[in-house]
Length: 429
Image 1 (cartoon, helix red, strand yellow):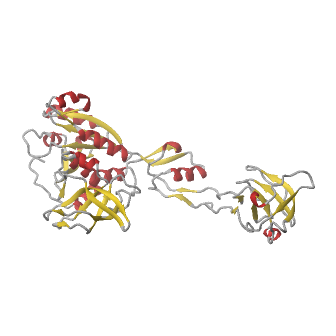
Image 2: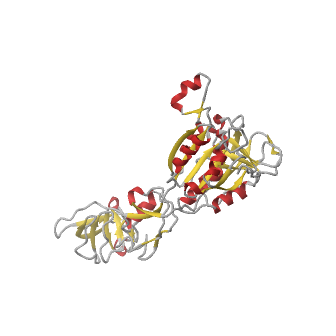
Image 3: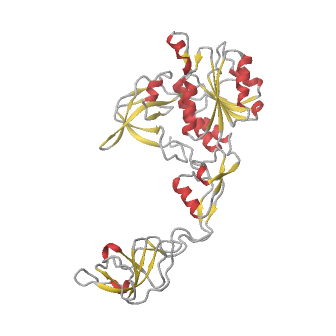
């Protein structure tokens, strides 16, 4: 890599190369209740009709629709009450002309009935011997309030497709067809390493106050982005500007599924990450992308760490976060078996001009606001790649195309919504 010339890929080319270089991790069997957020690795079909019988959608009375049509407050219909069915019970009788059976929500609808009259439309009578009667005061429910057998799922129907992101409803659907465990794709565990003698962890902030060090914020922001994506994190810490110490640090990524490094791959005299990675058998797919911020980004695989993907992100904190969103998050989501990999985008109206030279795609930090005719976006302030406060204030990233020389106030641009959901199957920019 030391002799490698910059590739200067477009953002699209770089993204496509990254995604082509990773694949879903093998599946594992997990308890249903521990599978939230995972990607399903199997297609689930239903072994039953669901619901398994016609059942009541209301607390009320199972009747024949023909018996209650025309019922009113002035001329109620009176039916003989012959049974009482709680949820979980079954009727002992069928509904015949002139009869009714009280049923609770979810209870099987007795044979002969095609209607459940809700209790609010009756006098609420209870079963009390052979003389029990129920008075029905409205006919609004005729032919209604019966959930049909199999109306949710038929036997053999697909419940969930492989690749589905398991949310609360999906887990409920899996439970309803008897799945106590699921095969899901394993989530990547990602090692993060920073390097630089000027860096310290936040618990050494007294040295920052003394003017001798700076906090290695990249490790904290990247770890948060990983956890936000549902990934496991192994924080290796900060490597000194010493090749042997840095090598020992990076060897701590053994057993992980991916490695992220920040800084250390440029041309500085103390940028040792390149040389150490070469000693570990790195195969570099590309270095440098035509974007701002984040141009000095690299991607490859490290044979000495089991051939795991490596993301070499810039050292500037905004650059590291932006390149994570553009390249790392989609790759890790693919490794986790997901099909929706990309943050959502929306078209926004620009409230102030932005100037640039053609040649790089700019990802500009903006706040979003709602107005009558849509969404507006304004700059969060200084757009320097070291201004982390402007990233903290951002709701989205304007995408200013590579060939553009800027955008005038009042025009429209597409923006990537940070922290947005649901994710998309295509990048949208």
